[in-house]
Image (cartoon, rainbow over all chains, first blue to last red; front, side, top):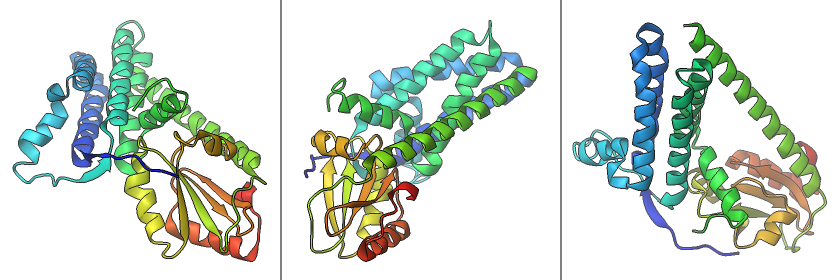
Length: 149
Length: 135
């Protein structure tokens, strides 16, 4: 029965990131019914998420929180003892799904839109209920020794 | 617009299927965990499976466990103590197991379990009821 030392993660940054994902996908999903070029938001979001996974200072929504929302007191910080790796993994997974969605958007728009919407649904579940599917997948991979802390 | 409607229907079906599979999986895990034993104790206690990658553990489960007052909570890192986690078929975090004083698992909760639910389950453990399949 043990505990390992944990880092502190600002959960407000994660919430802003999830909100950004949901809003962007919804604008692309609903807006593209009226103006098809809005679909470009989906590959752009994939790039933003993947870049943010590998280069955290390029994580657009998190930077919006750290550079604008937090300093101006618009969103209060919520530091929690946590590890950033599962959240980064979940974000990267979202980015991969959106990249796959982007490939399907022109030849098979239903598949592309469904994959993008699924990412938004999972981001909403995380935002509203704190359940992070990507983090659970990370746990399973960690349990099987595929990823190390 | 029809592409959006079809996509909405596909996502709805995927979410429903995932919810159904999760229900089946947790039922199966509870059935397999039935009868599993751990150390005996003077009073019922809780085995709390957690891990560093579990955010809900920190934001929801631990505050709920703190509300239980004087109840003994044995914290188990599911990665470091994989053997114990496998005995209780821990497939998700957090997992809480309410143990009777004689060391029998009385209730197993896969996922977040709020304090009132744990209190009810501890009351069951005190009177010796075994209700693992319907927890």
